[in-house]
Length: 233
Image 1: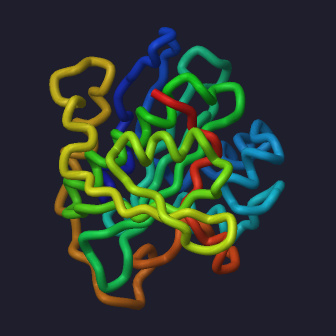
Image 2: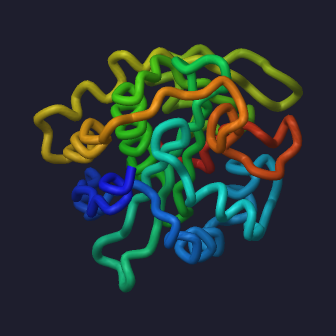
């Protein structure tokens, strides 16, 4: 996986012309994730973590950045035109233990980039990478009042049903999600996922990333993929 981790990624642009660099997450992104937390409102943190979490522990940062890029994969979106190119969005999947064709997902977009299409871009790019890794379906849990994420899920063909009080669940077939990435400059990020070298098949249990939730240290209701107001395409 070292070649993918070193990948510089690819540039993409939002509809308003905002330039981004999308690349796989790296262990050295811990500080960037912490900085990104400061750009999330309490409401965005609630929608991402199912609580108004204001910081990430060292173990959580390790779990979120030290990934194998096979069973646990993550993109980061960097703001090209901001000083230091900060992380402004993250999309990840974690393969479900014992069900190698399914993965739970999580999306996060900082507040000042919400409503500009970054959430939809990351969702589509994540689907491309997931299909490359043999994943066929995304399992999504979203808070009932997270309308932007609900729109992304429903736009991808997912049907949201009640899972528990205040939480909805959908299983999304990703066979066609992101198919428009091919040949479109705006979505060249898809090629990076397709270049993943020698993806390992998941073990049934006992390995980091296999079947673990994208929400380290959370309770059952909070250990759900929510999206943090990713916005509409």
